[in-house]
Image (cartoon, rainbow, N blue to C red; front, top):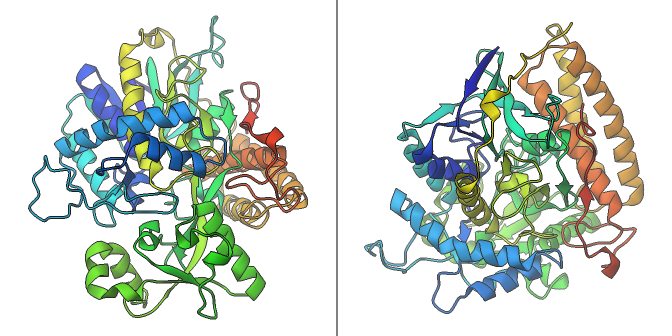
Length: 540
């Protein structure tokens, strides 16, 4: 087995991973691993933008207050203040690298703070920096160009992390520490190891745990599952954000229609063509996402509608083509002209507020391991993420994790021998249909029983079924050679169990977790949900 050595290992190439790699590049050899290409990540699909208090009259405290309201009592105020306050400096860094955010005047100078700011649900003012309606794609494009120019950065595309390598697993005396990870080279179907004194886990979210999601196919919760198997604390996994408005079309694969569309005045209509949001919240379409998603879900169920409709026809084609060029063109491709007719929409899984417990600098309980981006749970989002705070967190915390590593003492990872990957009696599988079937079953169980609205009975049923599936996956993992599909199945099943167990622990409705058995807030439950098994306790 090939073992690569480096000073810094970054697993994941979304905004958090790329930000960290860029900061580390001048100080040593970086290996940056991406499951597919550098361009493919949740970050690259972000449409709305980055929430930063740069407008005249806006303040850190105002942004903080909106974040606290959305977080429903579980946002850590000091964490949120620190991340929000760091935003403007990181935006300036992006602009120095070449990111261009929309401005009110076409020829505004780079030094002008004349941003064309958007507004989204839960925000009291316009504070969303954006690049049209493809903000994430623009930021990732620029960062990928920059990181490819760094001679100290070794890029391994099509490399999927299998598991972290820890001194505890190797039975090395002393406190447990991360010294790297095993990877599957997806192109050559070979196993290799990367050894490093410092590892940053930034693998993104886990949308593919659910049947319907706005996430790309790679979002299988790999980092969260690996950290759980290594014995790290996992926090607040019951808080799964369902984006209210994904395009309802069989070929659209839950194409996201940005919240910024509602920020520009779009209304939600039921199947009878009637607006309904004011019956659920006085903020109507600009209520936080959890409220809007539940309202759509309820409206569809009581009427028997297959979808709701988003109407922004009053803005006209000229405005829509300029402000939302990609969304307008995509809807047109599927036969819907936003300027002339309401567009059919449904909720779909979008973002995890929970994850591996970490602070704003990415530090975890394990030496040598930092976590950033959607894989981490810093306390910023609480029980519900405020729109466009996710890119902010990834940008700020990816950079902060790298700075923390640079200020930390080196460990002795290179001195510890990493054993070759053992296949035992495993053989190539001729039963790929089993993996495919279990993939679909995990996602269907989660959508039907652990979705927008939950009950004790549904959760108990889901836990039993996911437990059975994980035992089947364990046997399959032992008997057959690993493939990327099997590794992803292993991870989504692990994340599914974490979500269900967390949801069963929260006997109230708060933020993104809503249960018919406990429909009200409970003061006694105003705390984080923590799962902390022994190392290997979550293993398959």
